Length: 422
RNA sequence: GGAGAGAUGGCAGAGUGGUCGAAUGCGGUAGUCUUGAAAACUAUUGAGGGUCACACCUCCGGGGGUUCGAAUCCCUCUCUCUCCGCCA
Image (cartoon, rainbow, N blue to C red; front, side, top):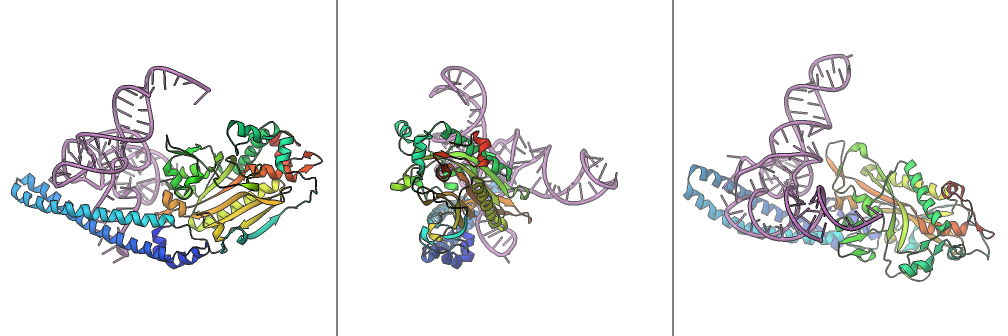
C-alpha cells in the first residue's frame, strides 16, 4: 500500500505514473487526499477532546485527595459531556480512517520511471536475449511427451490421487526435482542469500502483508477451519518473517532464500497454458527475497537479475529478459523483470522468474523498517524474485536438451542429479 | 482432544484504579577512565499519529464494558506455555 505521506507530497507524480498502468487515478487520489485531510482534522479534534478529559481526570484525582468532593462533582459533569463528544469524534475518525484505507489499498504501486507504459504482455520491453535458439526440427517432442515416455512425471497419477495440476514425479523425474532445488539453493547461498525453510500455510495477516490479500483472494487455497492460506510463493512467509521489525543498518541488504512448494488455484486458466508443466496447482520454487535501503533498491534489483541470469546460463537454456510494462506488472510492484526460457518444442517463451522491486509498497503495510544513519526509523524497500520456478525449467530442460531420444543434462546439474542423461 | 497457567518496552521482569509510557536488571548508544581493550562509573535508550518545531494524542495480546480516571476490575476472543492423551 502506498504511503499517504508520499501521496501528499507527490500526488501528481503518482497520477502520471499510474497512467502507465492504464489507470486514471486522478479522482481517486484527490479523494484520498481529501479524506486524509478530513481524517487529520478529526484526529486533531479528538485529541483535544481527550486532552481536556485527561486534564480533568487528573484534577479530580487531586480534589479527591484534598477531600473537595463538591468541586470534583462539578468537573465530573464536564467530563461526562466530553465523553459524549469523544465518542462521536472517535466514530468519525474511525469512519474516515476506514474510508481512507479502503481507497488506499485499492491503489496499485506507482511504476518506476523506467517502466514502459502499456496494456498487456505485448507492450513489454525485451532488454536481453541470451543463448542459441536451436531448431530441433520436426521430431522435437514437447516435454509432456518426453516426461510420459520416460516415466518422469505422471499426470495421470496426480489426477487419480488429487486432481489435475498436481503431478507426481517419478524416478529420474523426482530426482531431477530434488537436484534442481539443491542446485538453486546452493547457488543462492553462494551469492549471499541466507537459507530458510518456511511454513507452507500462513495466516491472514501475512497474506495481507505481502499483498496477496485483498488483491488475489481467489487465487489462494484457503482452509477455513483454521483460517490459513496455502502459500502461492515462499515470498509470503519469508517477507513476513520481518514484519513489524526494525532492522539495523548492518543487516542491510538482507538477502534470504527459500525453497517451498507453491499452491495456486489458477481459476480461469485453460487450454495450452495448462498443458503439461506449463501451469500447475502445486509446484516447486526457490525464491529470493531482499530488504534494502531505499537508495540501493534498484541496484539490488539489477544484482538479482544478474544472479537469475547466471542460473539460466548454467542450465544452458536460451532465455530473454523483459521489463514489464505498467499494465502487465503485478499490483505491488514498482518495476518487474520477467525471465522467459525458450520452449523448443512448444516454440514459445515460458516465464520462469519474475524479479520485482516493491519499494515501500509491501513494507509500509508490514512495517518493515530500519534505523538509518540519522538514527531515525524509515521504511525499507523489499524485493523478490524466483530463483527459480521448477516446472517450466524442467519443461525447457527436457525440450531444449533432447537429442536422439535422450535428454542431456547441463554439466552444472550433473553433480546434483548423479546422472548425465535421461 | 482434556486440565491448568500466562500474555507488560530488544530481552528478562516489577506494577497498590490516579503524578505509570510504565520500577529494576540485561542489552544498545554516547562519554569518562585506559597506550588499547575489559571492568567500573555517568548519561541516554519503545513505537505510532500530529506539529516548521513544540504542545498534544494513542499503544501494557485483540475487541467490548465498569469508572471522572484502567496495565491494574469485569466480559469475550486469540495466542503461548505446562501436564495428560494421541502421534511423524
